[in-house]
Structure formats: C-alpha cells, structure tokens
Length: 103
Image 1: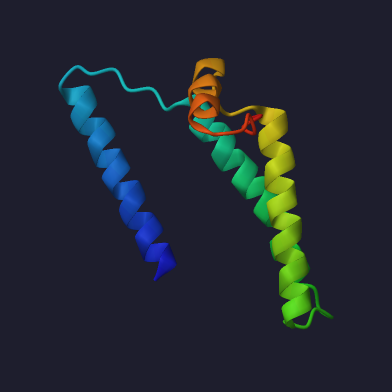
Image 2: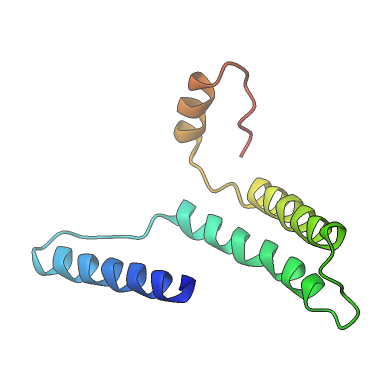
C-alpha cells in the first residue's frame, strides 16, 4: 500500500514537471528538499538495520530504540546539511514564540 502511494506521488510529480516544461516554465527541484530527503534516507537506514538484525526481537523497547536512533540521526543530519535558506529560517523563527528553529 505504501509503495503504491509513493509510486503514485512520483508519477504525479513527473507529470507536473513535464507539463510545466512543455509550457516553458523552468522547474528546479529545491535544494532544501533534496537535503531533507537525503537526511531522511540516511537517518532511516540505521533504524532499519537495527530492526532487521537477526537477534532483534520486535519488542516495544527495541522499536522505541530504533525510532529514537532514526529521529536523533535525522535531527543531526538536518542540522549539518542546513536544508533551509537563511530567510526561510528567519520567517519560521519569527512565527515561533521562542527562537528554536536552528536548521
């Protein structure tokens, strides 16, 4: 089911990009989005490896550990890759009550 949703979304995006290019609109994939996707893939990999270890039981603690590893990895990678432009960060920080958005 999830694979079908992903494939559907990819087909929709490709269709839209082709349609925009046919009409003369230059489309460039935002680099911030690419950085976020790269962070996602790199952060999910260790968690998936943890869940697929031969001696890994799918207990709540083990799944919680894998989720924690994935979340912490994503936050560290996103902080290193800085997916948002400085003006985007400023706008988001102005909307938040505390200056907490550091990416």
